Length: 116
Image: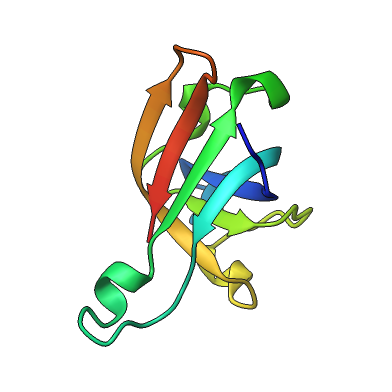
C-alpha cells in the first residue's frame, strides 16, 4: 500500500464526572494513506467536498479496531497535544470519523476510515 502521511486520532472515552470534561485518548499512526480535505465545489458546496479517506495498514502500525469510533477526531500529521474538548484543536484542520471498516484480509490488511 502506498502511504503519504501520518495522522493523529483522538478517541472519545466518555465523560470525566469530577471535571465534567470529555476524556480523550490520543493515538498517532505513521505511514497512512490520506486522501481528501476541506474545499468547496460548485455543484455540491461543502457537503461532499469536506470528506477524507484514510487507510491505515496493519503492517506499519500497532492497530486495534477498538481505537476508532464514529465521531472520533482525525487530524493529519503527528500531534503530541492532549485535549479536553474538540475546541482544543481549533487551530488544526480536523475531521470527525463517519465510517470505519476493518479490512483485515488480502495482501494489504488495513483499517479504512472516512470522515467529514
